[in-house]
Image (tube, rainbow, N blue to C red; front, top):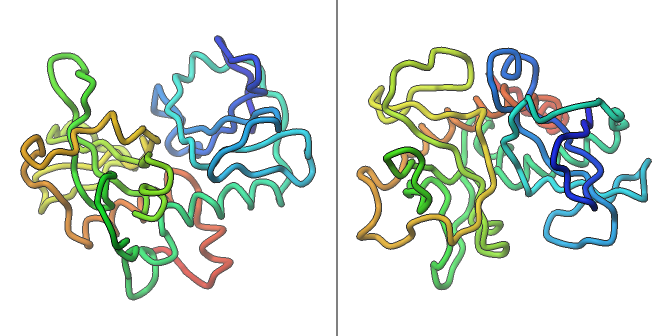
Length: 231
């Protein structure tokens, strides 16, 4: 569903909510992407087939306070929603990570001046009294070409028991899988001397996070269409 919201920018029509009821019912923030007028361009911009005067932005995942949402505007047609979901699945390499024999996104040759898949970084912006830790869940091809990254916050707090908070690091931390958000590369501490320990997650943890994102963002349908069944 696309919603209007408070403090909407002039060229933004509304926000398409991506997280499902299982997540939204218990959380203050929901996952969304902007729906805008078509005169803006950028990576992963998707022109809606049934609403050609509007664009969707699957690469701009946002976290939005539910209290900011106002009127429901319209529901995307099935083919438009499929375009959005397929784009998100590609950016997150979900078909590789959620396969019966999980793979991982390919590495990208050349200079590494971007956030890398499975790597953990501190945010440059202080939240409260600390810099939060984020693991990169988007693939390196996307990260390098856009100089952004889709990230998931990690936490050592055991308080979260709801779906969307899987254990990682052998039970030493949790990932906030329902809080996937796109950030510019310059908002992360990329220098090796400013990285947390551990500075990356093993593939098994990345698979766990990917499968949880499928649940929180209701992405099983696109994967099923590729013959992939997420457990």
